[in-house]
Image 1 (cartoon, one colour):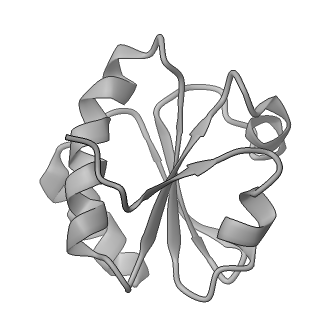
Image 2 (tube, rainbow, N blue to C red; image 1 turned 90 degrees about the vertical axis):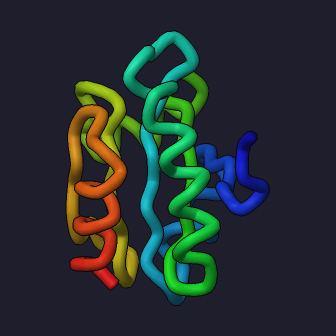
Image 3 (tube, rainbow, N blue to C red; image 1 turned 90 degrees about the horizontal axis):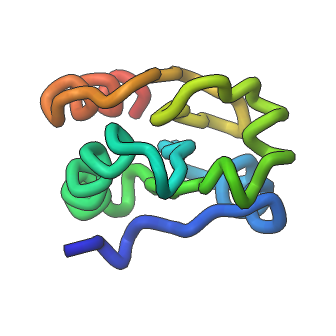
Amino acid sequence: MASDKVLILDDENFASEVLESDIPVLVDFWAQWCGPCRMVAPILDKLADEFEGRLKIGKLNVDESRQTAGHYDIMSIPALLIFKNGEVDDKIIGAQPESKLRSRIEQSL
């Protein structure tokens, strides 16, 4: 079941939700047709619940928000970028196991 804590991001709300956030934000750059993206989704739902209040997690569909995806040079998906203070703090390319994602998030908190 999808978490209601995962934000739906797009070109319009990206700056306010991610760049201006007072806590770190993990952005999942994904697309509907991407199999590995669908494998990562339930992990991100779980982590959104686990890190609530310390980290925001959002999903940005690269097919619908090409401007933002292009700005961050997203060439392959899933691409998970962790933003702190409006800057990219970490970049994780490809589907990763939950333990690795949790570890990378904790390093950015």
